[in-house]
Length: 233
Ligand code: APR
Image (cartoon, rainbow, N blue to C red; front, side, top):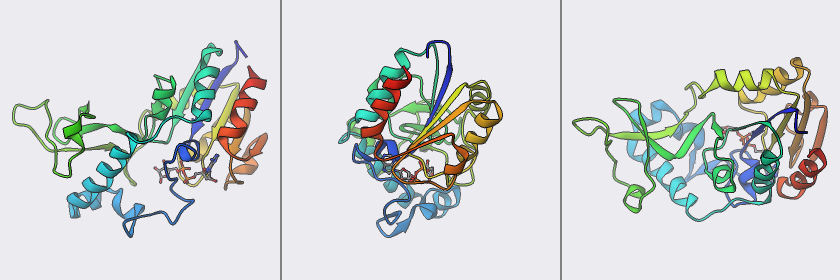
């Protein structure tokens, strides 16, 4: 394993056993709002208080959850692999808390807030930062309103150049806990296949893009991933 270039992409399923709801397993609703109706630039313009409350509730939840065995197994595996890149669609900080400090968050992060004026992000996880009132930046002479540092539907995912560069060079591409609904993340397995990588999926049930993988392991990530990564180490 030491010489192989390994890229792992995770989705909401890897955080499910930590108690964080996935997007498409439940009813996909939050307080009777469809997430697709809340997580958009249009919703932020139309009803910023609603969008702010939605993400503040999810940020407060970060304080109540902890990494599970799947997060831990990935962190251990990374220490044994010279070329390891972890990409996540998740906005929680469970990979970092398990030990994967340099995780690429392609859909943003709940820990940071972004200045609407400068575009700069700042970590805001103090007690006072979980309020339902808007927060203001520390980077502008006249403090500007902050938005959540999340990639909303219709916005460009982050760090796509670095992501493509890593996947195009990968020998092994592993996807954990993703339904394969949302692009460009769901299409990365095709990039890995084109690069000649071995592609492995670990998911509770067969997702839409299951047939694109060389190996499919169906079940809970917390139960399957430790053994799969141990066998690959
Ligand atoms: N172990 C492994 N897989 C699991 C587990 C588990 N314990 N629990 C659920 N799953 C699987 C489900 O079967 C499902 O296929 O995880 C997948 C979660 O899929 P989604 O809820 O669609 O989450 P994800 O694929 O990460 O969504 C991608 O969509 O809403 C946007 O930006 C949001 O990042 C998100 C993106």
